[in-house]
Length: 484
Image 1: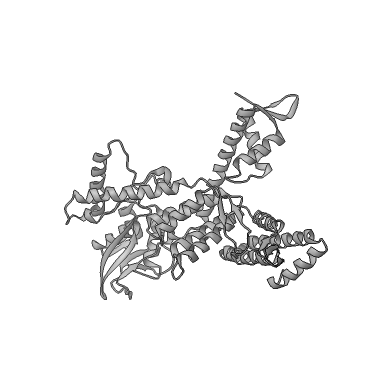
Image 2 (image 1 turned 45 degrees about the vertical axis):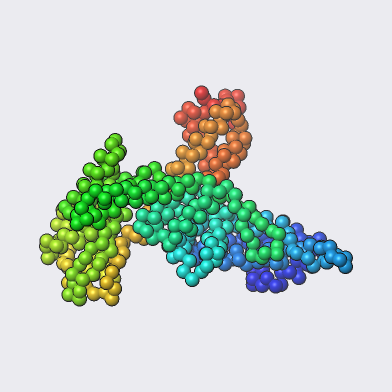
């Protein structure tokens, strides 16, 4: 198996079956799969290749299951019985494969779920390209088959939810149809996964996370926003600058972004258009409150360079900085900060993207990769690019390790609340339970969300006792009582 020669496994399976040795072969297969998956998952230096390696290895194990670890079914014919009829996978090997992948994933909690979500994000952004619809759907299903093996469904959902929101808001998704189809599969409690060979009767039922309704609400918000913008544009003059404004009105509860307490000051022309929309919206929806979040906003600017006019596709923060140079030939960091009131770290990243990246529409004195308080910036009239429409990437577009850690911390906090609620519901119904009973019922109650380890369950029970939601029986300290 280590040499991944599937053709050698079929005769081996036949030999072991003749001497009643299939249990031994199955145990060895399971051990080999678990160790291989664990090694891939634990290779922290190659996280970027983790999902591709897991997918490649799963192709090998699926092929072994469907072609080697399968028995021919006797088929009646007009001349007797054909002993080489269609094959049926040995179910013991099939379940061993599932169990081995699950145990291998547990070697490093949370990370496989996060990386599978990010892998799907890349597929959705890239689209099918030269693949047919069926071929692309098969690639998506292969990734979902890996998701089947993780206990950390909540981690996957958090990262997938955030990536989906960015794809939709920034219009980076290759296909709304595939997005909707994926959400449907993720919402279904059960989904049959096809095997590699159509002549085999083996199939696996995959249980997915049912908590993906927020994706439907995202699409509804975007559809309502398009209707709102059509009505807004119909009420203003065609030559108004606001005719080029597009606003997405979103329900905060459906989108995974935290409202900013202080946002940047936009240029007066932009702010005027936003005020026009705010007035329109408040008249139409009295009692509704609009909170503006510019972090994912974009703008298209026309810029005149020595080589000609270019259209720059930039973030709203980049636009706020660039438009300052309509009035000034040079600006220091402190001046830009005073004009925009942008968060310090955000402004430094924004200026880095404009003056230190591959597309330098600004120049910085002194040169360098970092932005310091005393740096001075100039508009770069000699900027060139072979394209007329130029997209300038933002530094923040890539998720930083710190952001990933923040998301993990948020997930851990949610897990504690989820466990507390489950334990209280169970105890309210049962009134009293011994620890082992409560542990089993709690893990079963939250397993569709994530699977906690025993120390975490103990910790949450202890916290509920301390906060007087539960108490211990004075005569049996292992017996917990519900406090009404």
